[in-house]
Length: 199
Image 1: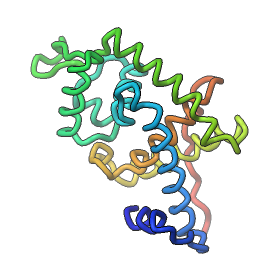
Image 2 (image 1 turned 90 degrees about the horizontal axis):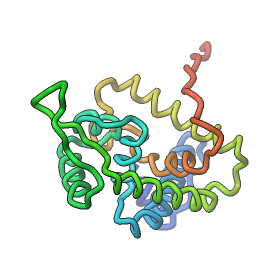
Image 3 (image 1 turned 60 degrees about the horizontal axis):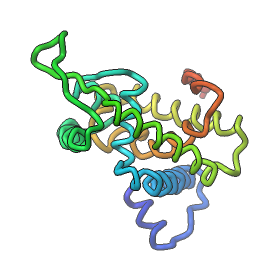
Image 4 (image 1 turned 90 degrees about the vertical axis):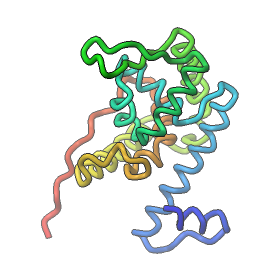
């Protein structure tokens, strides 16, 4: 991944080999999405990773720190610092977990909910910049395909999703965020199991 980014940043042409080109195109798309997402989130005081935490809490409700780290594919130590920052900004709060006295549940504050909504609106307007060449159906298909790739990787690497840099979805998260933000016709379809082709 780093090698591909170095080549692209130095202006080297994309490979003509199909297998290599797929990886390079994913890097280009993810990098573009990351840049666009950062431009929209920075004025709100958020990073793409912080946005992911707020959005996860909106979708799932209160979670423990470990659950959040796993859900967002974030290193557990990094999650501690991220939650500390979000708590200082008044966006989340740690509250005792009634089901386990040894842990805390992370709750969104009203300010956190409001900030997440503002960020979602910003990302939705920016999504068309990146996804303009794609029709609505193609955008849904893109998210479905990316989800299937990420799910397949998790199946191949059980228990590794929470380790930073391991899950491909981490690198592509900004692209999926933009596609999700642009989607107004309901939740994305569930990932379908890929059938192995006969050799």
